[in-house]
Image 1 (spheres, one colour):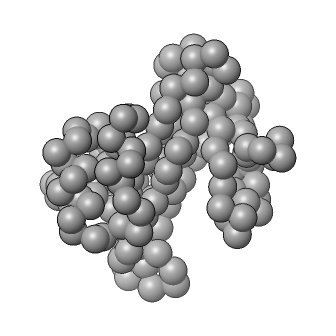
Image 2: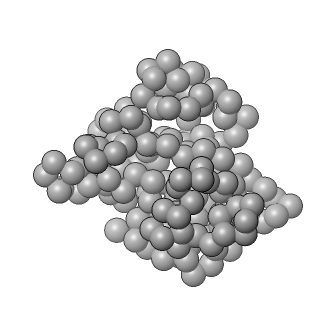
Amino acid sequence: MHVLKNSIREKQFVTIAKIDTIEISLINKTKQFDFNWNKEKLFNVYKLTVEENDEPIGLLSLDERSDDYALEIRLLASSKQNIGKSKKYSRIAGCLIAFACKEAFKRGFDGFVCLKPKTKLEAHYIKKYGFRSTKLYLITEGENSLKLIKEYYED
């Protein structure tokens, strides 16, 4: 799995690792992310890092919704230096979404992943990642989830 370092258009390999409540608190103190990640301590939080650097460039909070046979992306964010036109790395969100899709297959949910997007991002998730709207959630499953895994996770 890789992101692109925009300044040189070069692949940078990345890893995703689950983090604990202590690390969430430390990340929150750095103010590198716009959200209060302490609110996500009861859920599974993962960080995306460039290999050989422990500093997160992306964070993802997942909630297993066993009754719905789905994983919910509660929160997904790139670090402040990776937002907007002058961002250092691209493909961060795609890597994190593909990871969620892979986890949804692993747990027997047929790649079913849902999220409640911010209004301004809804069209972006539909166009860029192939999500479908159910009015309340955006969802990906099956073939689209496999496509995302292939594009972002399996290089």
